[in-house]
Length: 417
Ligand code: DWN
Image (cartoon, rainbow, N blue to C red; front, top):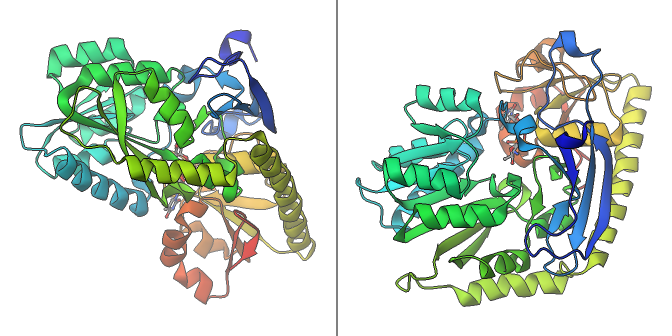
């Protein structure tokens, strides 16, 4: 691990406080989408400390060690279009933003972290102008092939100025599952302020730290996710920017996410849902999300879950059962590497993402196949690593269940279904 590839933070990325306390240690892990070619399995893999710190000042939960973004995102294998659930959610986001931002066919919608263009395709189908921004060279090509113009780069205020010069200002900006990945959050907000029309809106969506703690979602902690937001930490972030939060909504995506709506502080037309924001803030206080004890308690529950999972899988292997994984997700790799599970326990993993098939999981070196493999080998158990899509996956694989197969999920607790 060379020094330039990973940096230990000294201060909170939102409030600059040095009052940071390390609360979770998931060992040293490879990057979560660092899938391997077979010929590289013998090459020593780089791992980086996966530790989490809590800021006693603004309550932001954040990674203690930050891996250089280029290592993770210049070439990226995750695509949202691998899940119908996520695509349906994108359609609802596009319709919601159209009504809140009063989009017309002249309006420009810009998606930060636009990946394969799935979300912008939903906007384009509504007849609005779209533009993507993403650093992954391979995915920009995929998006362009599906007709979504995309600017290659990491979003910041410098890139925002270039985009405004070439494309004009945006009526709406979206950023789903990307803000948590960006080191400089203040740059994101100043870039959005440059991009936005005076009465434009900026919608961020990301997993919610309250759900992560409540539901033991430790496997969503990985090197790509630098920040795990609470509403309290977001309000502190907003204080230092020209934007302000005018509404926050919770939803069930990815185990529990927040949709956070921003406007320019000068935009007095857009009303702010103070009562709704305050209600969520009070729920956080009631749970203790702004105190370090909640994180220490979570860490203890993860250790318990680790023991339960390992014991369950050991017992199944002892009775000569065959177990395979479903969903070569980033979260799968965190669980496999932290629990020390490899191909001795999991025969293989199936995944609908074409770019992952034929590769091997980082650290655990488990082969990845297309989904129909489970009907070829008929394993006794399918461990659903992509638990956030359990319903979609079990619906799709009713035949496996009807033929006597069993599903296992591990979060929020070990369950055989
Ligand atoms: O924030 C992020 C989230 C949104 O996506 C990224 N940093 C990385 C990525 O995390 P992930 O890999 O855990 O995401 P998913 O979307 O939970 O991964 C699901 C995996 O399961 C994908 O590889 C696709 C696969 N899948 C499948 O094989 N068959 C999913 C469904 C629904 C299926 O039917």
